[in-house]
Image 1 (cartoon, one colour):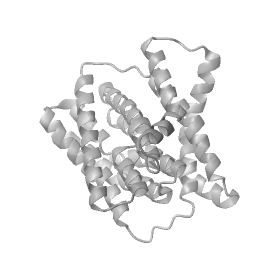
Image 2: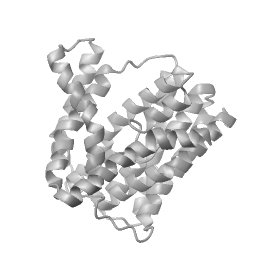
Image 3: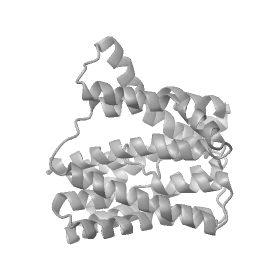
Amino acid sequence: MEVFFLILINVILPVFTLIVAGVFLHRKFQFDMNTLSKLNNYFLMPCVSFANIYQTNVGGKTLVHILSFLLIQCSSLMIITAIISKAAKFENGLSSTFKNSVVLNNSGNFGLPVSQLVFQHNPLGASIQIVVMIFQNLLTYTYGLLNSVSVDQSGIKAIKKFLKNPVIYAFLLGLILHTLHIKLPDFLWTPISNTSNAFLAVALVTLGAQSAYLKITCLSLPLFLSLFGRLILSPAIALLIIFLLKLDGTTAQALFIASSFPTSRNSALFALEYGNHPEYAAQVVLLSTLLSMITVTTVVFLSTILF
């Protein structure tokens, strides 16, 4: 019960405060959603992508285990969502958003605070979450982005559109500078860092604006499948992989918890930018974040028993 209230106060409520602010502001001032989309995708996202990879120190003996787990888990989710979307006969735009809603999770502003709460006396647990966050960032701006741009494009055209996105180059530049241990001067790093810190607030306000006129009258099949896939199927697959890889202790506990986080807000931003059912994408992010109060707390509790 204590974990539930800590997650509610420290993670869920701050997230929903910013979303509600976006709802109110958009209803009052009628934001230009195209401008907000471009601001997120072509300015804020590149900065947060660069900053995450540039300043994070990844290392440790468990790195191979972590990456093995993440590769198997994400590949499994990709295959399963592709099968489900085909069986359900989703059209391309809906299929793209559905896949992203299950495969991409909120490992940053949701995952890190939760891990810091759970592993406040065990630094290894929080370090594992940082590795997960970096992996999710890479997955977001490769699989997630290409998945979105390929809806109305095919082959070479989709790749060309994908390569025009500045997030990719920001990520690669951050990786190169991090690998070579090149320190940026303050006059460059300070604005990049400040912009990166602003991403969370602006992204959640944007999500609120997307949600300002949402009407969820019933639980549609795509919405149910997204919520089930992200909140139930993902941790279930993670648990199976953990047992297969014979992981234990803090590593197993941290990876199990990391698999349960709600849908990434970036899936909604991509859907907005490329016109792939943005209302449905926003519904998934909102409801998965709300329901995660129950599901994530349950997974945290189970992790303490199992590992």
